[in-house]
Length: 406
View 1: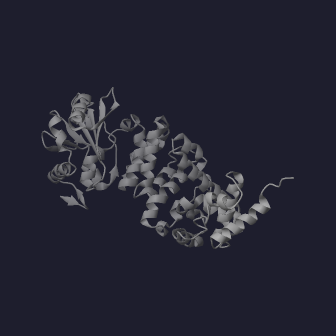
View 2 (view 1 turned 135 degrees about the vertical axis):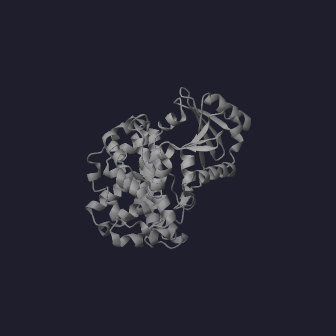
View 3 (view 1 turned 90 degrees about the vertical axis):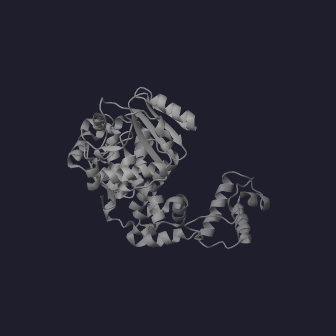
């Protein structure tokens, strides 16, 4: 049976799994797996949901000797082999767009192994040698209900990153969080700080890029997941439910909303703590800088230099900033930013440093930088029309601003 595009009948699920294994072309490894091996996790969940992916993540559990099995598969088919956990014997083999994780069973029975997984939706097993599904926690039903539920809170405490992963599933799958799980998250949210910062970064990136990212970010803020008692009281963190995101195109939402959402849940110290890139930290700082300026002054009170600096600094990320503007300005700013010929929203220049040096007596240095800034500003405000005017104005500017020798 298929309800609301979700497969619920075991036979249909098995058929779809077998079909997808051939479509994604990883059936060549099956002959290397010993009896008692099974497929588990997100691959089955996404098959039930009818979700196809360009990048395939496969999780396989074997009775023992995962490292040896993974090494033989890698050697035979020339995959990249990585040992993720030598003590627990967890390995990864990468073939182009297919990533296959192989791990040893951690319980005497398959049911016991599944009861140790994070959520019921990921605790469904496909037994290769018996060609059947095992669903001891009713994960298929929870998928049908779009519900995140765990068998035991201990499963999450064993790896507190799983707490944060709840919000990723809200964002990516539009799932609800079970009431008991919510209470657990509120109580143990601080445990997330025990997790490697790079892993936290990865989950946050997935959260802010999901199709239901807004709902997930609202929950992260509501439950104060990162423990910032005063952070969300700062007016920089605006009311996300009052914003109309429809002004952005689908491509713009995918590209610019993640940054906007990140700065709604993390301050600069946290961005550095969770190993965000220098570029991401700089972009967040610029959003904060200009928002704080506009908190103190009306946008129309900015002088020419300030307005030019705003567009120069925010040119590449302006759609992430428009929500800090008055509502009546957002559409106009977006439309002007979409016009690549708008010289204020896309500051440029008619000449570069090499041309300036060729025509005028000036070398590289701070003075050259100031001159190019001046010419770009003049062009942005339509006070510069062509190359000859640029050279003329550059000459006049040097006469007025170059150091005088006695």
